[in-house]
Length: 466
Image 1: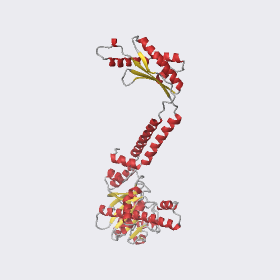
Image 2: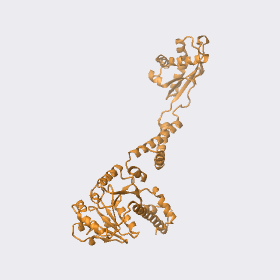
Image 3: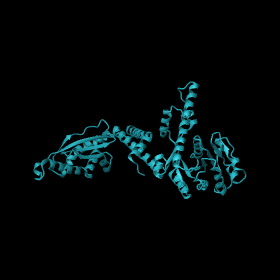
Image 4: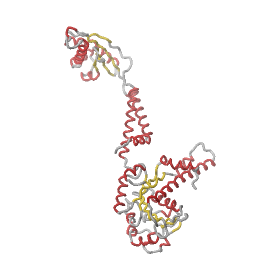
């Protein structure tokens, strides 16, 4: 998965809280470790100067280059086991040669004739004793190997009164950078591994199908609870006014979302006569029944005659929203037990009727694909401008596929952050195999931040949604 610069920036802003937490954890952990956990170390150093010997200088090298070359040679002398054995014999400190090598640093100073020996340990006394011993023994060892060597002490060893490490500020900055980098990396990794639908653009880019509706994720009861907990509202009248305002605002945005879906649907399905639309979803709890009901209400408000048929013959619940009984219903009409007019029920909304599921049937798929279903639809087409089929989730039951041959289009309801791409791809493949005309998606449960456009409409119209 590739990310554009814009997508990375948007993702960073979206997860900025987690990035800040990662930065804070990195800074805090590094500071605590450096300050309280890591033992302080002490460094003692001595600087030695190589005195050039003019008589030995090569004619092709000047005096300075010769001295620098000699410094490199002397440093190699001091990195031998012989040197460290002499130091350990002199100081009587209980270290191995390898341990002492790890504690010691011998390097030239800025490519000059000066080189520095540094010893770092957790004890100031140990560091000083070792460095002081090296200050005495190093010139002697070099002289024994090369008698003509001339070395003098430039900066003698001093007792380290303050710790040389750890560098708390440096470690804290590094820890913060590591925490920041790790949090960004984890966020990108989670984003790559997350196969759930993220937004409208995600759907369009992957499937090349339009998103006809974006339904905000409103929970009125949750909003009400938040309103009641506000400490600065002391009077009951004020609480009621704010509660009413929140509800009015939410209802307006919710209604406007379905009005936008209604408008987009008209452009997606241009046809004379009755328009028959399947409304389904890949899995349960993605909002297909809510979409069917509210879309039906929105269309009926334009004066069009709308019928919602509950084709979820196992767990249908359309009747509950209109306080109607579920039987007699569709299964009763299909089995010939009652007349069609007896199962078509009016709702409290003008121009909107429903046919509930009816008596539970052992073979709902066969009923929906029967010739009797086709005959019923031919009769209903004469009385309605729109027929909406509320069908079971297509990845759970194949009932909706039986209706594909009768429908003019299919609306797939998916939920932001919940429906996964593999699940949705499976649903699309099933409808394509049944030769269904997929009109597009209804993206349900979008976050409030993505509803800013609708919030703007609400403010513009002053909250008036007549």
